[in-house]
Image 1 (cartoon, rainbow, N blue to C red):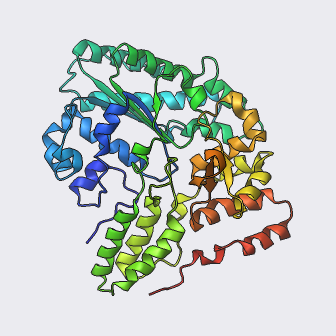
Image 2 (cartoon, rainbow, N blue to C red):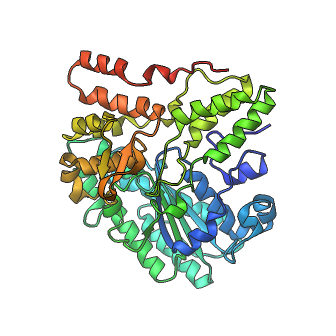
Length: 446
């Protein structure tokens, strides 16, 4: 029986507790070659945290004795790189940093997170750093970090820094008060704490105190501001080599459905029916301009469906999973922009696909005016949030963008539409005219 890792992003747990793991380790040598400081963006609930956990377990010097158990049978286990198990791993998760309070409170929230992670790091690597001479500064975690990095350098140790959801709490600051961007500016402009933090990372990397950096996030909404002092990272988000780094490929899903059908002792023709429905509701994502590549499935939605089918040998009545829903504050932020109505109308016009010369990859504070009035910025932002995806190419090689599937249409587009359309009755009429809306409840096919 397949044990689906619904909501589990711990690679060690997946590999030691018998959960399904879709092998992405063939990308590790390619990631090493791509650069020492990388940025990788994907929509929410697409497997970014599991990717970081995989890298942490692969490179952790303290996991060397578990390498065969964790990576045996996987691509990189059969062909490991020389850098395996050669780093000390420091991992931050900015999704846990609260955006509540004034700038001083947010600053302290960030410092608390950094100090907690440094404290855990010192405990984990006590054998390698028995006397690190690091005194945590509760009022200034940047001082704690610099002490740690100096100790590592003096001890000849290599550090791999992993940052998950780098943009989360900064985005929260921005979208929770859409008419007042001052808190956001205070956080990121000038000597704002987030910008200063990335300056420290850049300087430490250039001095050899940090050997590698891997950063994940959802959008580049704060990328220009947060990393203006850290302009040495390579953004691999739209590179063809990493299109399938997160998500489920059609061939993988086909194999999983076949196994589930076998467990349920159901006839073979059920497989085609199930795949057709999952394709319509969950498929459609593409993260590079090469439209010859197959589109991907959202993993959390697929696991939601397959776990239910495995247990009851029938599909879930509700095809959508509430855990995927975009934060309401972000929907309000998008809907509040002057270009919101025009954008919603354009993406719902299936006869004329939305065309862009290119996707914007910087949304700094200086671009907020363009974001409010230029549809190009709004469309790019919707792409990063997973509301739109690359569906093909149009005239003059422009990118064609479209809604990837029916779940996305109902969770995001319909909600946005209700917020930007002025009349309540018009909202109701539009809701019932929505193609496929009433099909979010599974119609039993088999």
